[in-house]
Image (cartoon, rainbow, N blue to C red; front, side, top):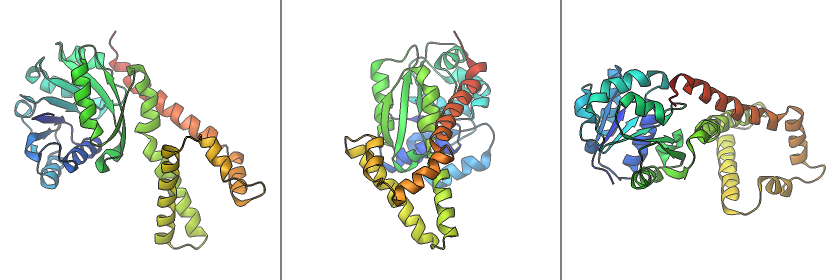
Length: 274
């Protein structure tokens, strides 16, 4: 695997990935180095929680790292690359988890033929259930792609895609958990309004989601077929679905993914290189 991983950025996504790979024991805490722009409290949290090495000195963090993971906010990418550029060599690998930022831009800013690979995980990485899409930059080779896949498979599933597809992946699986949590919020609110105890409703809702996911994963039936199988004419499920149709539930979700995709494209537009 790798002997040293450097995280540049210490936000929620960095922590999710870090937590996941440490939980799987694929690397020891002392092999992980973390730095960020200026938030010392965040670095203290990462060190005290996970036992990793946290430093402001970029050279010590990045030098000799097998893999440098860019996990800052996309708007900070230019300054972040500038702060590490002189310490990154062509025999290292840079992995970006930044929405909208192209590999060509990162390669251009680094100013050398460094292997850059983009990965789009989601925050379920922290418990080993991320859905991660991976795309190769100009200089990344097959062995490096295998290494990145192997790492991210410790925190969920991986799928190799063309880089242009990462915008829709961002709107689909990158942001997807938030859509599910929003759904659960609504279901919990409905249950509370109907007088069901919160602990009971939470248990029922969570298991319902888990069961539905397992059905999708372990049967050959399409989502439409599974829906139809539990929808009896004139029954309770049909009554609920008719309400969703009335409020254009499917259309809203489709627009949700579309708008997240467009936002990813918009965020990345200033960072395009041809």
